[in-house]
Length: 153
Figure 1 (cartoon, rainbow, N blue to C red):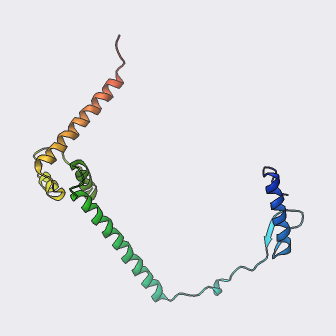
Figure 2: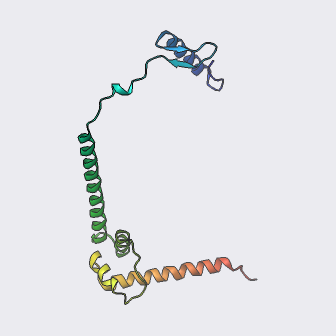
Figure 3: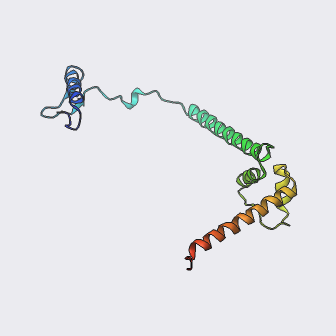
């Protein structure tokens, strides 16, 4: 019997499916409403065997495809960090993502020249982004400290 939570129409259509199943290769187990599939399972020997050379070629092809995907992602990331369409903060974040580094807060750090060159920014623009990040950090600290102290009356 179909579950009672099904609508009347769904229960009737389920009964019709069960009736159809009784007539086909599916048999209903006695005293239950469960279907038993009587079609034979495919044997392991029925599946085509692959030669060792095929497996090696597939592995090499898969590795080559994965390497090409990685190279494509890297090209996209490099284009993102160099694109004149992106503002300096987006370019610098893209540089940080590609290299797995954070831009230092020290304005005399030698890596800033590298960041400026890789992102096609001037050193002045990189320093401007540093200052903007320092200001944002100070603003967050200010908000955090003002939220932590209760208002005085």
